[in-house]
Length: 271
Ligand SMILES: [Zn+2]
Image 1 (cartoon, rainbow, N blue to C red):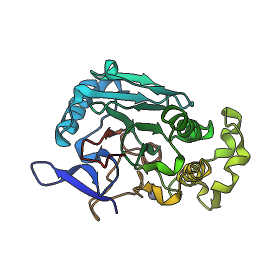
Image 2: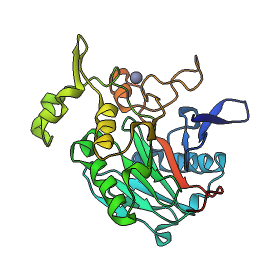
Image 3: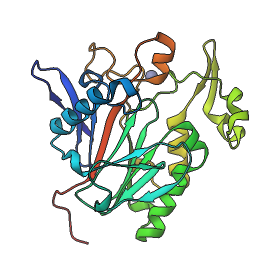
Image 4: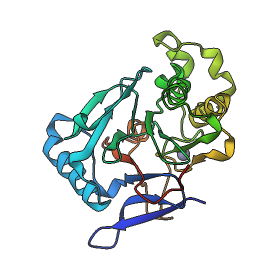
């Protein structure tokens, strides 16, 4: 059973979360109260870079070891090594490593970051779970890469779905986007339901089904069940995450939270 442990600011407010409870990689993410982590808004570059440093301090990770995935919303998968350290950015939609020092990071809003490792924490993938990348097959591509690269059976894989927009909150007219590059709108039909609000898209359901299709047992797919639009890590505390969709509807300022994963250094059983 996964448990979320919060680190607090000076006033005792939760500002960052570390996932505990037996997942074989270490996963951490920032909450909205720690500020916008995005690197895409030119006016806030310095402030947001400072926010990212505070996040790394909060979760006791070395920011100099981070390699950041910058989403392209396509489906390329790239291996990263220590030479990519020192804050490197890698333009693709899935990165993986066997290096225990590297911290794989993504600055996210509604697309759930996806972590894939094996029982022994011997390699680590971080995947951008955006609807466009999901549509282009990023999930299957990354899992098949893990199998070919590390000769691992899918039943040995452990997956975590980070905070991402839930199907109740994800209201968008996907049909209008079919002309803008959706591979096959029919593959989304089972994941779209209509309500008076519009078309609800079950993005996480789509991702989970692709993982299961690749042979990963459902019991080894751990969804943190945190929605970036409505989620509150402490009940009554207000929105815990930045959400592009919420910003687009409410006019509140847009931002990104930081999500970081690293191979565990805890003792693991020998093969
Ligand atoms: Zn929601």
